Image (cartoon, rainbow, N blue to C red; front, side, top):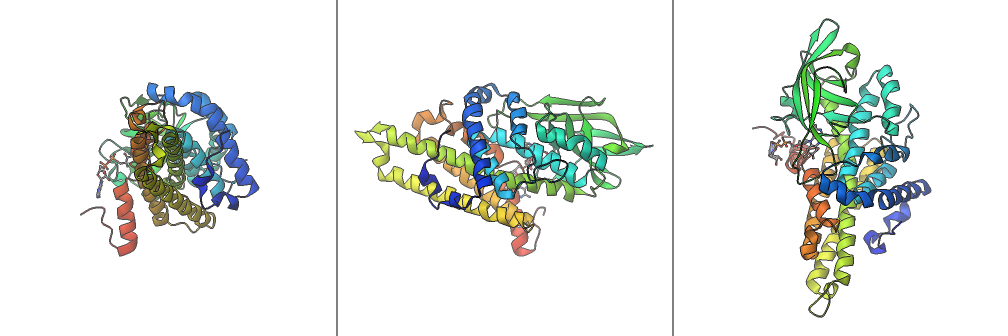
Length: 390
Ligand SMILES: Cc1cc2nc3c(=O)[nH]c(=O)nc-3n(C[C@H](O)[C@H](O)[C@H](O)COP(=O)(O)OP(=O)(O)OC[C@H]3O[C@@H](n4cnc5c(N)ncnc54)[C@H](O)[C@@H]3O)c2cc1C
C-alpha cells in the first residue's frame, strides 16, 4: 500500500482518527491501490464500470455502512466519509457506484420501505449481490425534478408507470431501480425490478467524463407494478431530496480524495521533471500553485470533518451539506485543473491519473445538484427568499 505524503495532512487530522477509522481507511486504500488502480486506465478508456469489483466492494462494507439493523454495520459518519475519500482517490466512478448503492438505493428502502422490502433488498444490496439505481432526472427535468413527467396511475390494485429517466448511474447494471413518479397523490417512489415487462434500459455512450461508470436511460412503457412496489413512507419530493443529501455528503468527502490524488501526483511530477536545468519544483510560480492547492485540500478536509460530526449528531441541515458539496467540488476541480497544467502534455495522458480525475469532476460538480443549485440553496438559507424560479 502506498503511504500518502505526510505534508498532504499538514494539520495532522489523521491523529484524531479512532483505531476503527484508521483500519477502515487503510483497508479501502489498500483495496484501491492493489485491486482498483490496475484496472482503471483501461476501464475508463474503454468506457465501462469494472463489474468484477462489485462483490469485493460489498465484502469491504462500502455499501450503506452507516445504516443500522438488518445486519448492517452502523458505522460512524467519519469512517464512511474516509471510505468515500479513499474510493475517489481511485476514481469518481467507483465512489459514484457506492454513493448510489448506499445513499440513493439502500437509504430510501431503509427509511421509506416496507418491512418486506427491507428484508428482501437491504442485505443483497449491502453485499453487492444485487445492484440498484436511482431514477429521478428526466430528459427535460434535471435541476427541477419537481417538474417530472414520469407518471404512475392506479389501476385496481396495481400501478401503471410511464416515462423516461436519463443520466442514471448503474442503470443497466441494476437489479432494482428506485423510480420517482408523479401520481394523483403527489410524487411517490417505486421499486422497479429488472425484467418487469415494459421496463428497459439503454447505456449512454460517448461521455467525456465518469467513463468508468455506467450511465443509462430508463424507459417505462405501461409498466404494471403491484402495490407492494410502492415505497410506503414517501409522501412527496422531500423524500427524494433526503436521499440526495446522503449522496451529497459522500461526494463532499469523495472529491477531497480526487483532489489529494491529483496534488500528490503533481508534486511528485514537478519534483522529478527537469526543465531549464533543474526540477520544476524549484520555481516560485510552481510552489505558489502547490501552496494554494494544499490550502484548498486542507480546508476541504476540515469542512467534511466538521460536517461528519454534525451529521453524526443528527444536526446536519441540507444547507450545511450543500455548502460542503459545492465548496469541495469547486475546490477539487480547481486543484485537478491546476495539476493537469503542471503535468504539461503528460497531463492529458491516461498514463497519469490527474487528467482522468479532472474529466470525472466535471460530472461530480454537476450531479446531485449543480454548483448553481447549491448556491441557490445557500442563498435561500441566508436570505429566506427561494430564488429557484422567477
Ligand atoms: C455522470 C452523471 C451521472 C448522473 N447520475 C444520476 C443518477 O444516478 N440519478 C439521477 O436521477 N440523476 C443523475 N444525474 C443527473 C444529474 O443529477 C443532473 O444532470 C443534474 O441535476 C443537472 O440537471 P441537467 O443536466 O438537466 O441540467 P439543467 O438543470 O438543465 O441545468 C443546466 C445549467 O443551468 C443551471 N441552472 C438550472 N437551473 C438554474 C437556476 N434556477 N438558476 C441558475 N442556474 C440554473 C444549472 O446549474 C446548469 O449549469 C447524473 C448526471 C451525470 C452527468
